[in-house]
Length: 61
Image 1: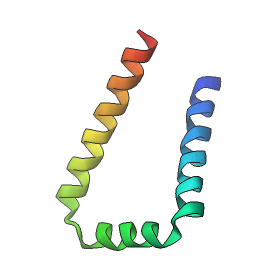
Image 2 (image 1 turned 90 degrees about the horizontal axis):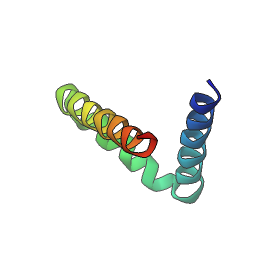
Image 3 (image 1 turned 60 degrees about the horizontal axis):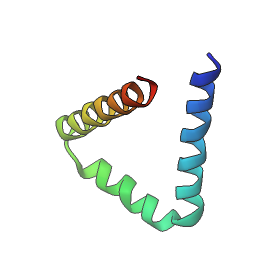
Image 4 (image 1 turned 120 degrees about the horizontal axis):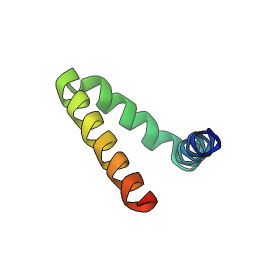
């Protein structure tokens, strides 16, 4: 459970840094996401999740 909380903490750190360093860029990313189709966002999310699982599997293996 502590590993899950550590991972969640790292996600928050990375997102926080992005918003702190480039707030305008993050707003542009959000605008782009609103204009992107649901299917494209879903596909990108599944690919990102699969890459994440693969990375964890390689690191932990």
